[in-house]
Length: 134
Image (cartoon, rainbow, N blue to C red; front, top):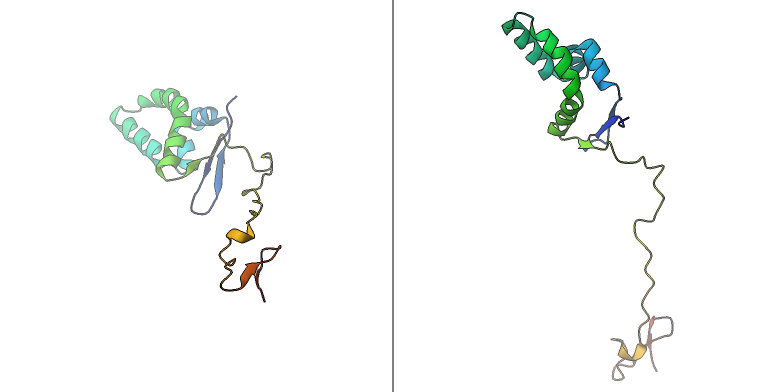
């Protein structure tokens, strides 16, 4: 069984989940299922096609729409700019890993330091802090 469709709005982080029996609901409710979900193009297409074919296209709609329901939803949300997060695991199952690994400070040689000039009397102590030599 396929996972439910999940789409994330990049503007506000809102996630829409469309549960699995998409084809079943598209078969039972026909083009009205898409209108309930905010997709008006399939409903308008079916009404126009029904007017031109004198209602004969209702049989085609009950067979064709459920077959392509999943791809219709995917294309609809992708065209709106939403991100498909269907295959992304929830954050709770991802092992927590630090975003940036800690870096240990590099050991510097005091004799090669900028402050190790014998003319100026400056030097670097063992802890890396510049010191003045008397």
